[in-house]
Length: 352
Ligand SMILES: NC(=O)c1ccc[n+]([C@@H]2O[C@H](COP(=O)([O-])OP(=O)(O)OC[C@H]3O[C@@H](n4cnc5c(N)ncnc54)[C@H](O)[C@@H]3O)[C@@H](O)[C@H]2O)c1
Image 1: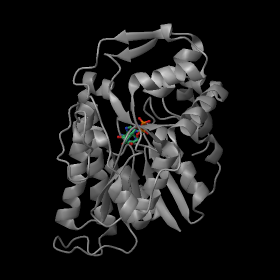
Image 2 (image 1 turned 90 degrees about the horizontal axis):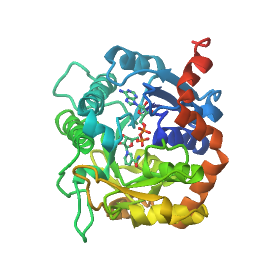
Image 3 (image 1 turned 60 degrees about the vertical axis):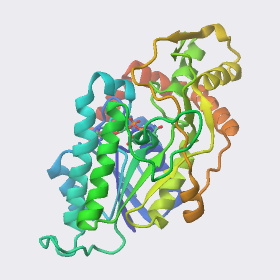
Image 4 (image 1 turned 135 degrees about the vertical axis):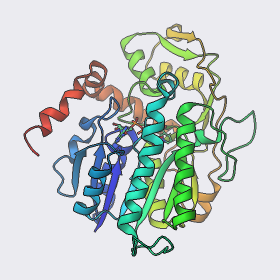
């Protein structure tokens, strides 16, 4: 049995990943540690809450004692680090929390993993680790900065982050790299493009637009809406991470992308059309400072070396995603009203 510590597993991608892994691999058990910030929602995990191979622990990746105890108690052999402050707009107004969670939190996890997994923890020259262990850092294409009209990010593109969010993710990537170079810790870093799919917090483009459309509210579009992103369905991101866990070469970085570039305004218009609404709902608002113009991922390395490729076409994925949000109005309602924040107390207060 693999004992995976998933951090940030109550967030959008983490919660999808927890369910994906429990479904696809009977040989894993998952400890999900999540601070339950505004972005963490245990209702997204309701269907696995009682699964004997799953356990939720409320906690902070910066909390050394807690993480150390989890390693002891659950014999953690794999870490998949999703936990992060993830919203660029918030990083512009409150950068500090991005640096402490995304960089210091990652370093804390690395340090504890190193000590638990090293065969001779007190020997600073030893690079021997227990068999079958891995630290996987979930990063983002935003660490590469922005592209012009042409070109794509490869794993060797120099890092040039432009927002406090992407700078904090780039900082974490550098620390992960250093733990591999200096201590020989078996790590992988994955850098994925924009995800979409079920259970995404409606501060992000696609669920925000679906929700506003449904409610007949205006659809705020930054600048001219021509910012281009490479969209990937979240379940394809999960399958890519699983593939890297299984087959990724130690120390390697893998880009993950869907070969699916779309301008924000295209997505907004597509949602309007699919939901039978009118483009008069669009309201252009002042652009975000430092807004990256274009991202595009070259995923040749993960496709050729690890044999992964996305299974969703964008047309299929976006149609299913719109349908999911429309069918799961209650989930959206609980998120937008804030009532999901009480779920932990209701579900876990009496358990412990
Ligand atoms: N969403 C995307 O399109 C995308 C693309 C590429 C990479 N990523 C990366 O994937 C990861 C997950 O992204 P997401 O969109 O699911 O984010 P999210 O904001 O939905 O989820 C983040 C989760 O981390 C938790 N968290 C925050 N601070 C914590 C702390 N100090 N300790 C423990 N838990 C904490 C939150 O409660 C939340 O559940 C992030 O690292 C992000 O950088 C996201």
